[in-house]
Length: 228
Image 1 (cartoon, rainbow, N blue to C red):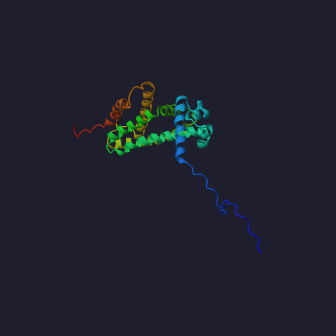
Image 2: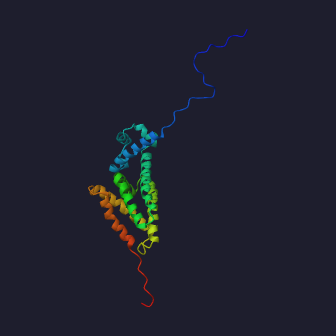
Image 3: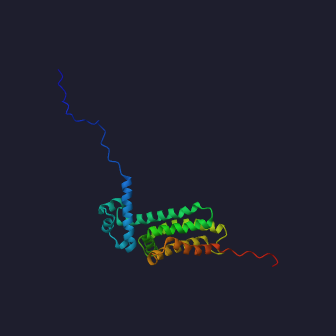
């Protein structure tokens, strides 16, 4: 007579080879945490410079644990590097909106307005760009040089359209005009935030546009007719 098998224990037995699934990641929460860290780092780094800010201060400002910084970025340097890239991506998105306008004058208007709007929302980022771009040597100079090229290339696209329309002065290269426009917008935005914060973005924009359009409106002299 066969011996009876083991009595059922009442506990459900999982089939062999199957394991409990790990909890799914929460990308929404991760994105919110990173944005909090970006905002906190931007406030502190913009005011005091990257070298003077600690991970503890960034975590406290963001309202998260210190380990959260290391979990998301690996180190303070990793956070600052990601912060610079994140900020430039936001600025580039604002500038690219000008590409929707067929009229070159209107496109330049929106280019200037988009840049000033971004720096108005993130004034510390303008301070960070100015302080680190022209710091020699700078720890993030290599990263910022690449990111600067990304921004200037967008401006160059618009300036090329202006040149193709015959609205750049003779002898002015598109690359020079693009770099000059970037520097103008950056310094004007910084001057606005630091020395004239009572002015509105519209007031600042309307004071810059005549300068920009004055450059673009200078045409090459018309050739004299033969025999004159």
